[in-house]
Image (tube, rainbow, N blue to C red; front, side, top):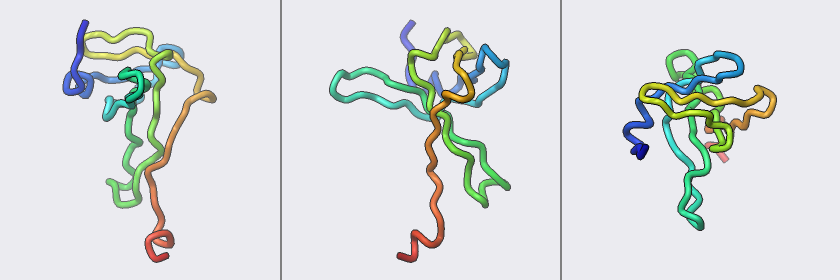
Length: 96
């Protein structure tokens, strides 16, 4: 199955181990040296309608993907081994 980024964005990501809905795919990480997809990125949930920023992004490595279906992407990983990255900033950093 060949899937475009536009099609991936409409698929919900669910952790098979816990049954938790993680969100929808927002971005992908690509290794430019090998021309391969490394991970899927689900942006963090907005806090207070986005006024207070977002939670940390969830980065799902390709090895953790179990199945990509028509509507859902099933992944399996431990919550403790979850890689997150923050896109937040503080006002103090902007003033420097």
